[in-house]
Amino acid sequence: MAVTNCDVVVVGVGGMGSATVSQLARRGYDVVGLERYDIPHAMGSSHGITRIIRRPQYEDPAYVPLVDRALDRWAALEKEHPRQLLHRVGSLDIGPPEVGVYADSKRSCAVHDIPHEDLSSSELNERFGYELPDTHRAVYQSDGGFLHCEQCIVAHVQDAHAHGGTVRAREAVEEWTASESGVSVRTDRREYAADRMIVTAGAWTSQFLPSFSHLLQPERQVLGWFQPDLPERFCPENFPVFVCEVDDDHYYGFPAYERPGFKLGKFNHRGETGPPVELAREPDREDERLLREFAEEYVPSGAGPTMGLSTCMFTNTPDEDFLLDTHPDYESIVVGAGFSGHGFKFASVIGEILTDLAVEGRTDHPIDPFAIDRFD
Image 1: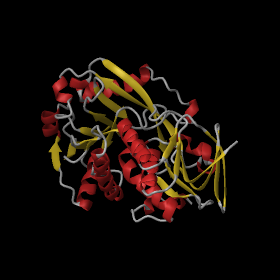
Image 2: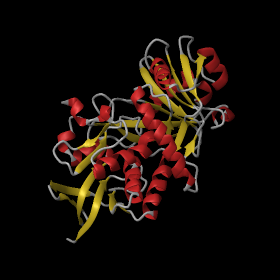
Image 3: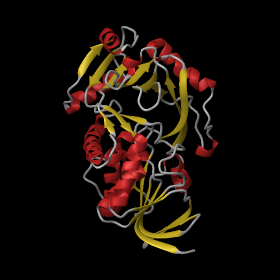
């Protein structure tokens, strides 16, 4: 089997991998991205047309500098791509006032001085068509919105091509070895010898890095699209993206865009975890029921006939924060994983971070909270 030499091999060319290949190629490195499926594809975590991006980070204020950099990088990428990638329709973080999504979003705004509006439930209901209880409030922030996720991948891969990078789809990694001299990667087509390997394989990361299996748990996720009774209310000009906490569950949604219907999801949908090949790909009536119940109670004007359902995957860490680090046993391997259902918005800056770690051994981005050794 012939051996291809390069500077860096990137395993997995979805949201994170495509951004990493682009960044490496832009910096002049000889990079090969390997993807077992198509570019883009619907088997992992980076499909479904839209992904939320929002400046307030209720998960942790530490994410705000990263999302601000990501917004800049998405805007720069969009200037060189024929289609719009970033749609600034605003974002809503909704929940009870004491703790959770709303309270933590407010804290994030306070820490980073993010301009926002604080809406009561009556203001929220009247302005955007919800039917939420009086106990709820919302943080509205105008800079947020959604990314066209598949087009983001296309744009990053095309950018990599334009700068000399190589991406090979439908080529599955079967084995790798690491030594002081670098990394050897064998696929079902050829072998590669590289100075560095970056793993951005989503739910398949544990398959390549078994020592990470206790830190990375793939989880089945389902998205639904429902016909609105009042379509104009759910167009991008009128309906911000949202995260809404009700009864200790978190739901999220989008305006209608490129596919008929109001899009809705539930974090940690049915709690179904396991290896990606064992998780059911086809949505069923129970998946539909869980989403429809929320829509009928809290967004009834968006709870018309089902337009579609789609399955994707989260890959969760124990604390639901990312893993962005050099492998503890191999300096030649860098890992970007465990994005826990809130990672895609950061892909453009994560490409910078993983490239920094691979070629410089460090990064100026604030990634201390995402080190692997925090679980030691």
